[in-house]
Every structure is written in structure tokens, then in C-alpha cells.
Amino acid sequence: MTASQPPHDEPPTGTGARLLPGAPLDSTAQLMRAITSRLGSRLGLVALDGTPRPARPPLVLVAHGSRDPRALATVSALAERVRELRPHLSVRLGHIELDEPLLPATLASIDTARDPRAVLVPLLLSRGHHVKRDVPDAVAAVPGLRARVATPLGPHPLLVETLYARLVEAGWHTRTSDAARRGSGVVLAAAGSRDPEAALDTRHTARLLAERLGVPVVAAYASAATPTVPAAVRAMAARGRHRVAVASYFTAPGRFATGCAEAAPWIAAAPLGAHPAMARLVLHRYDQALATPEPASERELAAT
Image 1 (cartoon, rainbow, N blue to C red):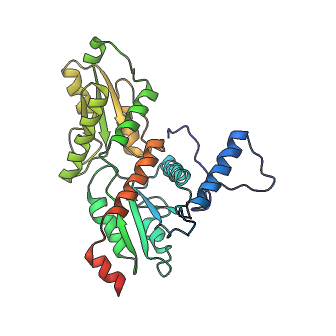
Image 2 (tube, rainbow, N blue to C red):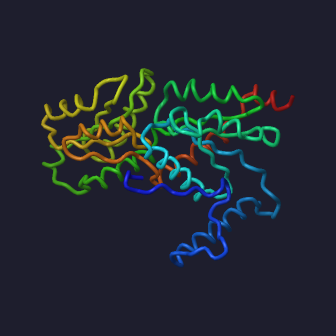
Image 3 (cartoon, one colour):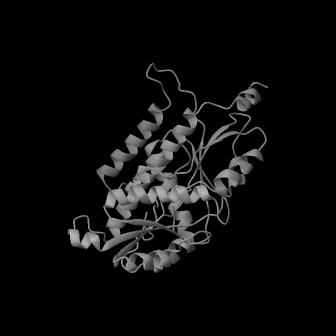
């Protein structure tokens, strides 16, 4: 989702689109989407033999949070896309800091007496302190909660699909001459972390994007790691790459994303946002987490 897109209004969790008496419909297509979403919500609760399916644990999207109001609008729109893809699934949102609802409040709202399970999907793009410490600590602070924490979104080919789409939206030429390609490059601008595994993950994404674009892609950072985005741009120019784009490796708009975009000498792509590939990736991480065998400690706790 780009900054110009309006936020989506969120329907009640897990219900999908609703048809209200007398509500205006813009088009036949809107009517069909509403009917399809409602039908999908009902069918998703029933197995092929007609018996009720076991309830799926809620999906909790874990966003970082930002003072930029566009960030909350963006992750809310992403949550809505996830609901549209899987209407029968309860999708909730919690933030590590700065935005509400905060993650502890979201987790505390889960009725663990009815069902203690949940799957947390961090809207984070690499391993780091938030994934390794902050999110598990928030889970451990809720008595009775049996939550699985999915791996971060990156690296993954669906992220590369989104990065490519955002670059094309910003003006990247999909067809160009060999000479133009030799003078082009991309700086993959990320938040940065002191955790060395975070840098490994970001460089992995940079390699995948370079293969997709056919030009060099250098990972650079807004803080806590080097090189900085301006330094990476200068290094590319020193190698004869004067047409340099900045790819925004941020889930949503914010101070870091804005600062990195300002360093672009040519074009700067929008953050990843609520692109359809992002919603598919969220559900992929959710399904992966559910498919992972439950640790013995969790099985023992469940039996007590």
C-alpha cells in the first residue's frame, strides 16, 4: 500500500464482508465480492463430510509501531487483506511500541479459558531483538496462553515480488538496454539491527532482488548497521552506477523509511505495505507455524 491509499475499515474479526439491509453497493462486482466472502466464511467452518472443522487459533499480526499515522493505516489494511483471503480466520493486531493496540493488550484479550492457542506472525523482515526477545516475552507474560511465534517475513520470494512491484510503481523500467542496465543499481534500505543474523537475512533478500532485476543490489541501513543508505549510493556511483533506486525494505511508512527515501538520487519505492503478496506471505508463515510439531513442553502443559 502506498501512502496515498486510504486505510481500509476493518470488519468484525473473522466475519469477512457483511451485507447490511439497505446498504448501498457501488457495483455488481462489489455485491459478488461480499457474497463470495460471506459464503467462504461459512464454508471454511465445515469439512468436506459436512462436520464442523476444529476452530483455527487466531492469527496475531505483530507490527512494530510508529509515530507516523500512515503506519497504523497500512498494517490495518494488510490485516484486512489477510481476512479477505481467509474469512473464517480470526485476525488480530498488536504493536511492540508506539501504536495501539499494544501487543500485551491484544494477547490479554484472547479467551484462554475457551482456547489457549494463538499464532503470532511478526510483520518484521529479519531476525533480531524484537523477534527473539520482545515477542516471546510478551507471550510468556500471559498466563495460560499457548502461542506459537512464526518466523519473520523475510527473507522470502514473496517479499522480492513486492519489492519489484513497488520499484515498478516508482518508475523502474522493466525493459531497458544493456547500457542502461550497466549504469543502474538498487539500494535495499532496511531499518538495521545489531544482531548479525538480521544483516544476513537482509543481504539474502538483496541477492534475491538482484537476481530478479538483473542489476546489483546493496543492502543498507537507517540505523545500527553499515553501510548507511547515502554511503551505499555513493559507493554505487563510484563504480559507475549513476541511476540508483532505493527499494524500501520497510513494512509500513515511518521515520526511517522517509529518511531513506530522501537519500535516493533517482527513484524511491514505497514501503511494502498491503501488497497482495504480503498478505499471502503472512498466511504462509501462519500455516508454517501450525505445521511445526508442538514442543514437548507445550504438550505437557496442555495435558496438565
